[in-house]
Length: 352
Image 1 (cartoon, rainbow, N blue to C red):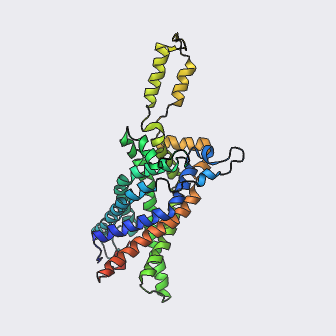
Image 2 (image 1 turned 180 degrees about the horizontal axis):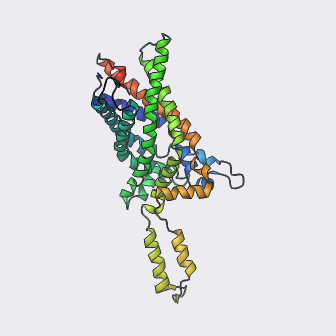
């Protein structure tokens, strides 16, 4: 049985999250900018359509909010995952023909990780919204911190910070449901291969690199598969801070347009003039409607075709390979280290 306490799991998860945030955050910023609807306008040269220097400025903008939020969210994820997985394994009935249980272990891992992800996303969503909007703030636009500029957008409507929870969970649930079964299986294969060749050492270093390679490979595959969902999620979260948080809604703008048409506009001398249909149409067109994820996906297809839904996929795969490898590698190594400090052991079967 595992000798890890809840404190071990929380500390190991927090250290893993902090390490990954600092090392791979610039890649995440680049991915957000690639997927933004304003990518061509803000980060490419108009004549050549090649990236301009602005794309690589301020790559750590918004990192503070993520570090603050990922510490509790990662702890909540791993605590929920470990306890839920243990519960599922205990409740899984075994038979003579199915000694490991009637329900396949990968399904139990996927279910446990999905429940843990729902808990984690509830904590992480506001930070994710702040982070992605801060990543898009021009680095030379103001002396004010990008995170503070972003927070100012939500001052009148802080609940908008949770806009995107469904999109974040919608991306992370299939991601973790794919990643964790592949991760668990990859670890078994690598350990078995080393066992057969007589190379098993049982050291902390061995456990760490096996976990890192397994997690990174599984994460990269899962990242590529879920890239279209990530593109939609990015757009929803950027829209949350792009006028929706504090600006008038579409219905308010339309009402204003109709009021202008019925009550009349005034010219420079204060005389009422008739509002044309063009004015009302412009007001309607400039208002920002809150579109569904499906509607945003169709917009991306219309703008950039199928290729647009996979924008940033390669970068996300690299970022996830490095990030997942470090994240779970540091986490698992941390659990073993903390248990050994107390003179106890962690069974391999009880690890992730």
